[in-house]
Each structure stands twice: as structure tokens, then as C-alpha cells.
Image 1 (cartoon, rainbow, N blue to C red):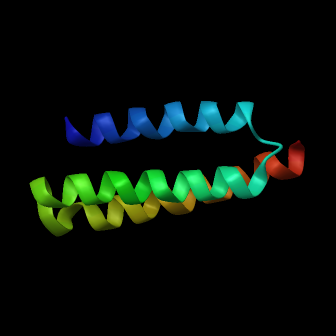
Image 2: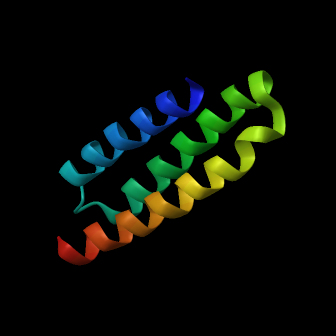
Length: 72
């Protein structure tokens, strides 16, 4: 259940970042803060189990933001 919610938040944030893809630095900063916020909230419930999935999501999202910026 937790990973489904995490993936849903990730996909919704990518749609929002696609709408504002011209603002590269803002998108990258906002995305990093979002992943950090999700990490802090989930750390108390699941501990270190969330570290690797969040790092994977952050790396995937950062790569997608870079690609969106190149296509904008």
C-alpha cells in the first residue's frame, strides 16, 4: 500500500512538472524537496526500508526532469 501511494505521488508530481518544464531549476528544487518530505514522513513509519526506493525515485525523477528540460 505504501509503495502504491509513493508511486502515485511520484506520477502526479511528474505531470505538474511537465506543465512547468520551462522552469528547470525550480522543478528540480521542488522535486528534491518533495522527495525529502516524503522520506522524512515515511522514515518514522518504515525506517530505513524507504531509503533505497526513495533514492531510486529521486534518480528517475531527476533524469526525467533533465529530459523534459531538453525537450522544452
